[in-house]
Length: 486
Image 1 (tube, rainbow, N blue to C red):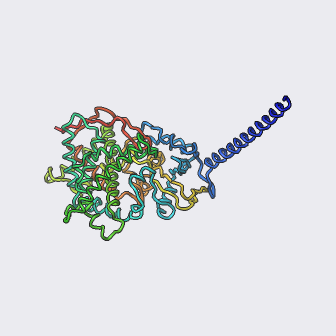
Image 2: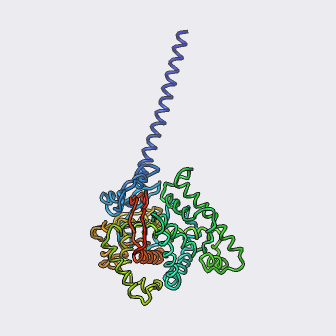
Image 3: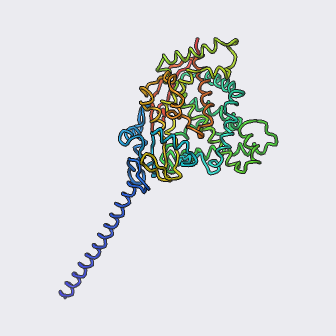
């Protein structure tokens, strides 16, 4: 009996040793695999030498460091610390995507000139889901022509300028009747309302929700981590997209059912072209209108809100700006006549102020491209498929190009040559991909400033904080009391 028990114990011990050996082997193999996987994450494959940098943690990369908020107009710490450590070009990983961040003006100029050859336009996941589809990528030439036709220089000069001024006069009068105005939110409402009138003649006026409020919430989700779960900013952003698109789809359907169309707006133009361009489906038109409303509002409203704050804080700039516009009024035969195109073109200092606000504001995180072939530059290789972020904020705040770069100094633009500006100033993109609505934005801002400084005064009553995370936000708003001048 004892012999049998002893024999069984020996067999059990041997079995335990075997199981332990298997467990240890599996753990060892798993450890080797994980170690190899982490090594490959930190050292991606490349047919050459990658720029210096860090790929961060597995799966999330350096996303958390990127979205840490900073509370100033200075270069975001994520970019600033890495440029100091690695130089003007470095590698990183954001939300699982390998990215090259560049503040190298020569490299930026190279790839922008090679758009469509070395690189292609790219958008972050949320942007891509909300604004783009394959047909839009392949029809950019048509879209650019459409935007220039309705919002370009000729349309601004011949039709839109007096409409913009009338609309702004009405907006400012309305603001002046209130105790205080949160300028960013109010400006979004104004910019969206005006653009909607030009795009589909305000056909959403009777929608069961405020389209401008929808767009305010949309912006908060565009730079969010792409996790589509209830309660997340990304999920809310996609829900807004769905809701507004549904309302716009009803507008398009109603317009298509109307035998005679005489609105002469963007929607009529699109419907009229449906027979000659196969990509112009109802869904394409809805998506395009949705995107046009965004680009016609976001840069304008953020720049305008920041201009209110900066002008209030710099009375010497406000004094010269006001003098320029008072001179325009004095030179008119009829002081009450509408603003003319020649008067707009004469606003030298105004446009310098706008440039300076755009430079400091850095509304977009940068310009995104994706390498469509291996790119060799300065001893480094950017692999095909990698995303390239041209860090415009690093260009706009470069102390080698802009003396005291954080100072609000519109006079600096008197000395900046056009060639230098093309390389170091890209608020609306660059080259053939520059935003087709750039001149529209400048005209809208200049017209607003003209009517503001000649007829109104303002002071901040609440808020004023600025946060970058990484796009610029005003967490407690810019609340101003606006009143008519005596």
